[in-house]
Image (cartoon, rainbow, N blue to C red):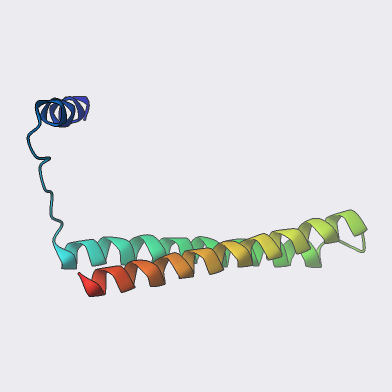
Length: 95
């Protein structure tokens, strides 16, 4: 990794062009699909955990607030991940 970075830096300083690395589109799409599916699975797990915390709060306002916050933050994270997936798919589709 360091050798590659030093090579790129040397090429940059020498004035030559940077190496163009092209990813295979189906491979990149597959990798990103796996990553976003994993993020969705983690979000589902966090929703279930937050729901269990809410159910087992036994009326304690602090525990209820923590469970509601976890639900909110998980939903926000899921929306951000879905937006990122949509943007990536849009960009890959235009390439």
